[in-house]
Length: 73
Image: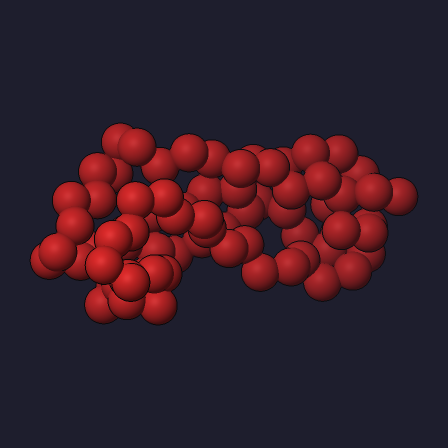
């Protein structure tokens, strides 16, 4: 993102769906966030997701992988 602009939505990616399922199939989608704000200085900021649930899949909270948001000048 560019400094001073709105922080974009943090969106997860998912491996492992089967039988035509996809992210829209999750009855409880993960919540994603970052500590970056429009007033954050240029740099890199971690992104996080947690909380997904589905009775047809085992979603291990310990397997979430953090991402990165880069703020450019």
